[in-house]
Length: 224
Image (cartoon, helix red, strand yellow):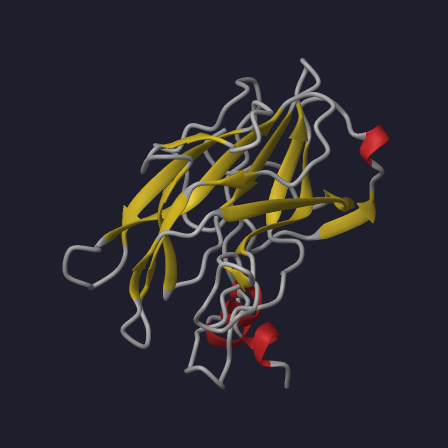
């Protein structure tokens, strides 16, 4: 069986828990996410419908999409491969399982009334975690001067001294007409093989070719 698939949140939950309650639907009105009301992963329990073209997105509607955040191989001296923070594979050593491939259907995208896009993702690796992005623990701006911004939600998950709190959800805003893959200054904590703190820029990939409708009422991240 494919190790990468075993460790996706959806695959793990199906094997370990069997069923997961769907996240509550809250009416979309604000252009930003209220992280104080958001829950853990909002993607578990979704049922995906038909594919949607970017040009056919309806304003205010959340769609499923593949959203990946990764450290490029050229920066990653540990394994010299792209390292995906959005891939839930638990690293087992230099030559074992690694979160080195992108994942699918793990995020949300919404077209806003001003032509910008909101992007939300809350599935992150449990051993290779994000501590800051965009210049701080609360978020900031992309490095390309495009106006792409990010906000964070943090939670105490790790049982590691001085690193209990980590980022476990991100909300990005892409300006109208933006089509790039923005990079952000970031710091990570590699909680395996004693690698510790790293200061590596991360790259955001939002694949608009993977947009899908959501058919069972879970149409937005909880807390919108």
